[in-house]
Each structure stands twice: as structure tokens, then as C-alpha cells.
Image (cartoon, rainbow, N blue to C red):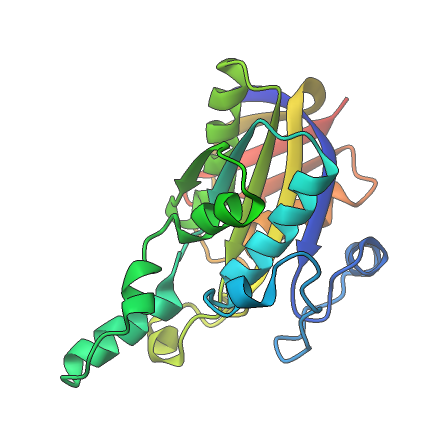
Length: 240
């Protein structure tokens, strides 16, 4: 598989990292992300809306709103490997202990909850979709973006995010799998600045960073070519 595109803007959030200068320093100096570091304050999401959202969804909707206000966006793709796992765990825990399920948890437990809240809060009936594809969720998000660009949408917002993974699941996870909340937003147009080609060869080992932040780290560097590993494929990127 081969494709090209242009990234015209980006924004990201993670523990201890928020503005572009912090992310640039993180990329240049190979700094680690400290899970206990504070998250930046929300700048676009109204407080009442934030109260209904989980950790990752708050970040994803907040930076999504910022991009919608800054750019003329035609369509939106939200990607999340684990979706509303925090909320779904609370539902399962309530059922297991014969407790009442929270109506808010029930209503907000679907995978497209974050992108739905984005369009509602922004009051924009914009075309949107929600993607989950395991380890390759972020890269498969690009495939969804490409389909929208080919359908005639000129500028697409791609947001990849995840929330805090509940402690209950940690024993079954790879020790290096990130369990902290983060979000990355990219504004994408058709173009040829970035090239991507896939090849077989990945060992499927869980990386120490989410796939989208692995991409961002290499994208912010001066490297002309870089590789993002997936479950079975290597996603080989190069700059024009």
C-alpha cells in the first residue's frame, strides 16, 4: 500500500506535554513521558461538557475543538484503540456487584462518543467516523482519511487518543504498554509532502509509545525517512 498527503497543522496533549515547544524538545532530546505529570488545562471544552467525558475523550474533544475553530474542516476521523474503556469498566463493575448502572456511563460508552461530543459541542453537523484497529489504529485512521479525501472532502481532521487504562487490566497488558491519557490531532489535505508505503516485517511487539506519538516523535525530527511499526506491517514514511 502506498499513499501521499500533506499535514498542515498538528496539536497534541499528554502528561507534562501540551504546547509545540514542549513537544519539539521531547522529540529532539528523546525525553520520556512521565505518567504522573499533570495534564494541561482544557482550553476549548466547556466545563459542563468536560464533566461528562473520560480522561482521553476530554483531551481529544478539546484539541479537536481548537482545530475546528482554527481551520475550515470538511470531515473528522477519530481513532482510539481502547475507546471508552474507563466507562465500560465501570459498567461491568456495577453489573458484577449488582449495582445500578449510571445512565451517563451507559449513554457515553460507545466508541464514537468522543467524536459525537465534538460535533455537538462545536454545533457543526460535520461528516465524522470513529476507527479502532488494535495496534494499527492510528495508521488505519490515515486510510479512513484517504477515503474521505478521495470522496471530495478537501480538509480532514484526524484525532488519535486513548484514556487512562484501569488498573484491573494492567496484569494482562504488556509491561511497556502506555496506560496514560493522550491525544494527537492532525489537519490533513491531499498532497505529496509526506509519502507512506507499507511492507511486511513487523514483529508485533508492543511499543513503549502509542503509535500516533511514535509517528509524531519522528515527524518532528529532521529525519527524511522513518518507520512506524504495526502489528504485521512496517509503515515507512518519507518527506518530499
